[in-house]
Length: 214
Image (cartoon, rainbow, N blue to C red; front, side, top):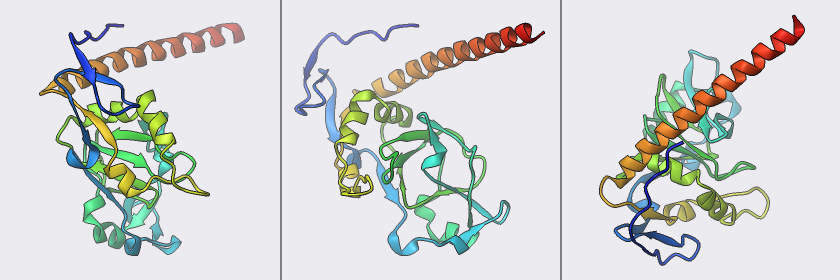
């Protein structure tokens, strides 16, 4: 695997847990670089609003975030009436899904393609219209450093929860111009290579199993 070139100089970020960042980077709050939206309470829904495929839009839940990847292996559908009631949470390409409530709170993934209408349930928020590369932001939220910070931001006495305020004010490193795109491209390339190696290994394991059974 390739190695991303180290920056020449670093500086203190001013955020204790974040540590040092490249000299020409800054630090900001998430709310200043993206729009964070969730399902408004009075626009919630009941089991009566859950419909069959073809009768509504996919409603995304924490089960659609698996191993930091977007998955549609499990699908539930919400009536069209409820879908169109909340246009601000209609899922678009490059939106980031973030679980804000429940046992998997803090998990996130980027939605790179939208093949059919989708919305979110009350356990989720969408990070939309980011002024920095959404792929970079997604990789950032899936880094061990950010995940660890999210884990200690739990405000729920029972069910783990991240408040909207905590999400809005979450500090993130702000890359220098186009650095976010370069880093995202690099990580996309490296991830694709790893995925290819895993696929080849799985194929080899299957062939060995078949050979033993022959």
